[in-house]
Image 1 (cartoon, rainbow over the protein chains, first blue to last red):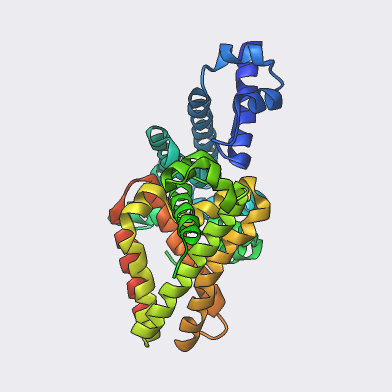
Image 2 (cartoon, rainbow over the protein chains, first blue to last red; image 1 turned 60 degrees about the vertical axis):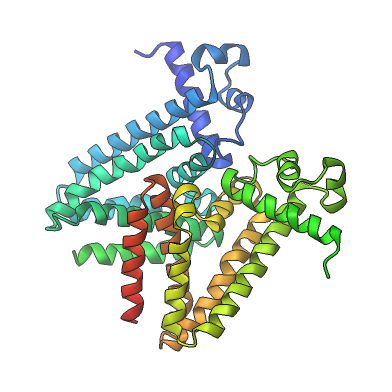
Length: 188
Length: 188
């Protein structure tokens, strides 16, 4: 059973996660997170001493959620192509957010590279969760030596489509490019 | 001949351009720009009343530089494939900056989409300079109906490669992907 303290900590993480995504890490203040999480500011420091601590917890939380999601897909879809299609469905399911705010992982990674280079490797850890899961799918499809390159290329494709769909507020571009990628997977 | 006032204005634009790229728009203060431009803060407001004014001038300045660069390529390279190769060389020439800070256009566009949605269309104007120049190249290569889609796709590819090269601090990925794109252009 979760204690109240664990609940509060999770509320802070959820609020920070949403605000970092929608406003950016640097544009989000301690007090905005406290307000959003409905935690009195006086209690806040009991859970997190600094915004960097919250960022580390947000990234750790995202990584756990991503791993849980991928483990679920592994159970649901034994076939590697179906897994890759499911991966692309994730982008379509997040269409509105991607077009409005960009990719939560990519936009955070680029922001941190500019101002928090010491935290950038944590953002990379999020991409690595996908890379480590994508590699065995491409290997299973017979692309042993190229598997890592193909995983990075698929992530890059998703990132590029996010940036351009976001800049042009154009969900159709996102859908067209995901359709192309689904065709590409079928031909692997 | 340029007046001192025009020089000062340009110094402010150049300083802001560099800082917006390396730190992000929101993380850059008026006084940092003034210090970087070596303009006394008291004089600063004579040139720009707000950071949004500076941002508009930075984007306008970038657009003018991009147009001048593309016009020069048009003169140097009559062949559309050579123009497209030159476009990709631009990414290789900026390799160190792309890996360190991401793409100046893409990272600004995503940042503004989160917090300055009213300014986002200006960031899109930068992409449009490239789109408007890329379309006639793909048309000249016989891709009349798909030309705009191909232009957006090429930009998306550049964006995706920038985000991933930046996240992994990996110039080799950038080079490998640009090499692939050069091959793709040859086959058009």
